[in-house]
Image (cartoon, one colour):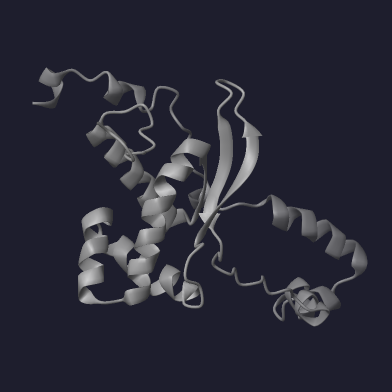
Length: 190
């Protein structure tokens, strides 16, 4: 009897279920936020939380256990060096599930599954008025434009914009570009 053996099976065989969960966890470590169904998010949440707890320990044994789940050294390094240090002050609650509504095709409940503390993005550097003016009038162009009258300056400006070097042009894309390789016969490749 299966008393107290509750598990979100996702309508798959055991090996397929495990592969789906591992794939979700790998994508979560890479992107740190994903759009998925509610049941998949709930099924993978448990494993993601365990991996973050392992990352907080930062021991060799913890790294090996994470390697057994993730399967790639790069993902283990991201988990231990970038993700886990953000959660040193937390004991649990490393992920959250935010509802988005129902999917149109099959009416499945869609959610955003993400870490509670996302990586902070560096703000873009805004240019000051002086930097914008300096870019607009470069030192090479400034003396040349001051010597000529305004009528000649207007004539030269459109010509400079129209000229493009021949090397910069890209070759036109072929319509049947990649189709040929899809339908290639086995005997052709030998």
